[in-house]
Image (cartoon, rainbow, N blue to C red; front, top):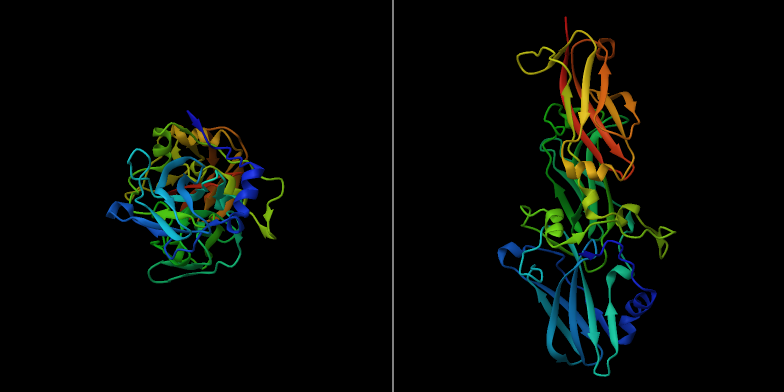
Length: 366
């Protein structure tokens, strides 16, 4: 089994990579960051040689697994060149939608090896200049990125519940980006967009320079793909100081991609409380609720992080349980519900920043 999660790049490689331009081989700017391999497209990866060399381009996943090696047909002269990637790994499999990093390796006739690895000098920088807007009619969330980044987009109630995860550290290209949202919570019970307390959060951190974002193959899960290859997923080593060249680095940059997945939680009633015709639970007496995470893989993720469970009515905080085990049983008293119809939302929040959401409808009994 190949273990790549630690991704500790030697100091020698770091020095070689940062001096690649001066030494004679480096990446050139390319206009395209995102491409669609499923449409039969291939992406040009341009580079410059200051002296003749044999060149290879190694394609790595965001977790550090080497997926493909592209090679020049013999020695190339000094000048500008390109190799092209079709979005397939070394087994010919189209990679899942994700962000990938190309590493340029040039070997001169004398054996000198020059490496331009963008991960050694970029990636993880917190983008503080992201401003977003929400279309009141369609719910479309618009924002602009100064560079390719991983983006977290959430909708919720200010000072209260997180109601929906729209993008969880998903890779996005630089420029104008639009996220589609119907304005509702994750279960379609509450129109957050129309609530004056409603808020949308957009935060981001930069991908390594020259990163490639593939799209069009969403049917293939990245985690399932990596595990099928025999890769062991895990976090990267976090530096003692989260800063590079005066820019703050996000701690989430060092998390394994698997950790960006939001666990699915389940909220069920204990006993058999009556329901209204449209499915709301009638609350006449204390109502016991069971909160659980049914998926085994999701449970395994939670075992590596502390978490807490919060309860909200129509987005307003009601109670919190700081427990490190599931399933969790919690009881709602009729006096907490008050009168009328309410949406009960459960947030399971981890110290890694993940927030799972589930909502149900309750109706106070007359």
